[in-house]
Length: 300
Image (cartoon, rainbow, N blue to C red; front, side, top):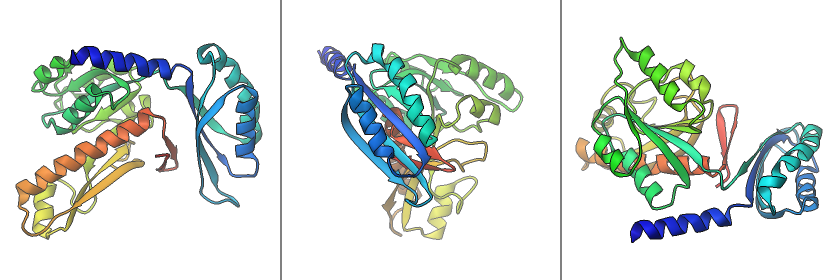
């Protein structure tokens, strides 16, 4: 019964989104951008549902915009709309993309032995809170196979050792290239190489504790406990070739005290990690993020 209800809600949601699109724009700021985009969509018969914008500096900065709209017969009309919008984009020197809301992004979740972030994503996906398709889970250990397959999701075990890392990456790319829109590192305890990152620029999201760079290396919670920290947290960010230095998407913290031991810090840290990662993934799949330089503009 629960599965049937979920399928019904899913079908209803897809019908509602059939004619919905989202446009992301970035360009040098100047007068007339919002008016030009709004007038263009009006003339095309689109109904604007939401419009958000941000400028780094009205005089000489960058302008960012996210606009959601409905347009009848979107699938048929979208190619002409994109072709015609190119003239406005050229005039304002825009970088822009249009996404159909009904076209779900395909996710690959990479995980090692810790399951808390993976479980949060699976639960939110099952509940319909993550409007995406989980195409696969990839792990360097076989521990999560039963859990993942119980959700009806393909599980791929690809062991990684220093001697087999190149072959493991080749298999990972073979599984994901052209078949996945976003890679999520849900506590995947392996370094992602620049070669792999090139295939998914600004499309790999990682989660880590917020002690970096203060507590680098092993046992960060032990280091934090020894220093008597009063806040612990987590950071979700896009992955770049520079380790743990990509554009930050979301962060959160929780207050702690001298009464919390290492195990309690770990437990609280896991809770923050799972929530922060799920938020970052949700914002990405809803086309709410624009990367500029080494930062993100998040329309949330």
